[in-house]
Image (tube, rainbow, N blue to C red; front, side, top):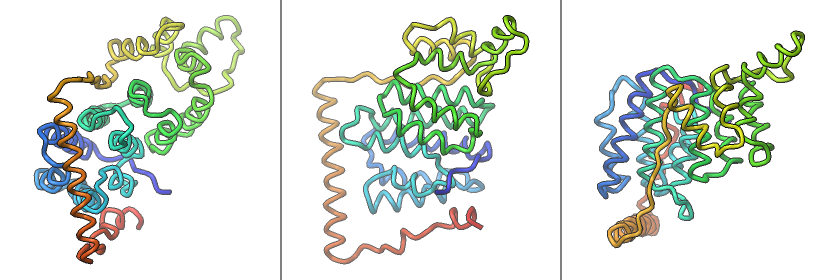
Length: 284
C-alpha cells in the first residue's frame, strides 16, 4: 500500500487553512459536502491541495464520508489524518467532527514549522489517548507516516505490545539520550540495546513524571519544549446541543436518501470517481 510523502511547507500551510475553514463552517451547521465543494476555490493553486479537495468532495458525494476520500489519497493525506476523521464519523465515537478538524489543523500547522519526530509523535499519541481512539489502529496509522524512520516504526511495534502494561513515562525515558548518559556514568562501556529516539530533555521530563498520570507528561512537554497542544472538548448536555445533533443526523440521512434515489434512477456517474491526476503523478 502506498503511503503519504513528506510535503512541502506550503502544502501544510494550506492544509491548516483547509482544516480550519472546514471546522468553522461545519460548526456553523453548513453541510460538509458543500464546504468541500466551495473551499477548493480558496486554496493556493500552486499547491496540490485543490486537486485533493476536489477528489474528497466527489468521494463525499458518493459515500457521505470524508475519511474515505482521505484514505484514497494516501500519497497526499497521511493515514493518521484519515484515521482521526474516520473516528469522528463513527457513530459510536465521542469525538466531534469540529474537534477532529482542529486536531488536524494544529498538526498541519506544526508540520509547517520545524517539527521534530518526538514532538509530532507525542501530539499524535496524546490525541489517540485523550480521545480513546484506539491504540492498535492509531499506532498502525503512525507507522505509515514517512516522517518517521525505521527506529520509530520499531518503537510503534513495541508500543502496541507494551502500552497499558508499562508506564508511558518509562517508555519515553528508556528510549532517551538521558537514559544512555546515566547508564554510562555507572558503566562507561554501556551500549543501549535499542537506538535512543528521544532527546535528553524529553528523557528528563519523562523521568520526573514517572508514576504520575501521562497527561501531566504531555502537558510538561508542551510547556517546556513547545510541543503542540491537543485540543480538548467539553461535552455539553443541553437542549441546544441535542437539537444540533438531531439536525446533523437529519442532514446526513437526507444526503443518503438522495444518493439512494439517484442510484435507483441510474443517474450516478461513477466515472467522476476515477483516479485523479494527483495520484497519477506520484505513481510515475
